[in-house]
Image: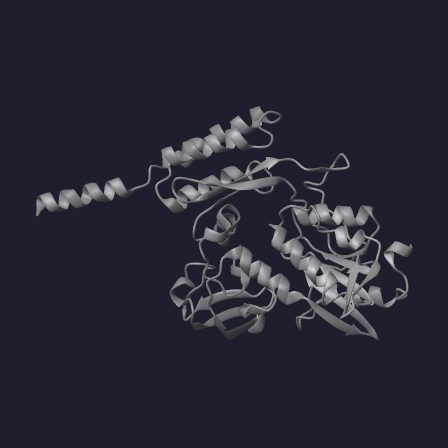
Length: 390
């Protein structure tokens, strides 16, 4: 029995992660890939040296993660994070790195941010479970089936089932029934973008609407283009919603919006096919503090081209280029690898300002005040005014 106990103790000791080794892997990655490794070399090395002892000497995975995140915070850069499988961001990084072979994520169609009072809804994805169950941005989820809520692990046992959530909304405590699914992250955001396409009837106008949740790959650019040239082609105006979500690459997204609007008819002896080339109707873009990365570059392009009016609040100013690196412990390290300039000016820490500022995004009843302001602006623009005629 003594031998067995000693063997068990040795196994337990061996199962403890080698945090010093894991830290050295992270340090090498940062030193190799950090965008300012030359211009901020002394500062970079000082930070790595300052936090290295505590990180390498961590006594648990939770302490290691906390210490690494304190080190990352000291850089004051966007697109810099350490993510484990208990973080929703891990599955986003996995989806970016692996795409079709990425791991699925237990989810209810919402994205969360950790606050001192719990996990608050940060994003509600169009047409998915959370929105259908009347969750709202800002709701703090307290329990799932009577147990403490976390955005990933608490959902894992209930994939494919309907569960009961307890949430706090202001001073109210509410309960909601909601279905737990397990999608890969990028297909989930693509589905939400596709679900968002709609025509809003407002004061005799038909206003097209599209929420671009991320710009991670060509599928999202195609979804926007297909909406403009498909369901929304005969609208009187267009609202592009860039609030929240994530970035990617900005190339090509604005193309349909700057092309001269031309109606093409393809006529054969048997049929006639109508095609729209370019979309020049009046346009509003909605932005907020969650609009980040490539969405900010796209916003800058649209603003410089005087293509639309911007409604909402200033974008995040998080514009550094990045790509995830998978570590040997299974976590991801997201390191800013490129600085981004627009016309020689740095958007990082600056962002893009709205033309029409809306102090509050939603009212107490859940009404979208940004969207309401966008519709109000379009109501005052003559329907015949097209961008290519300006």
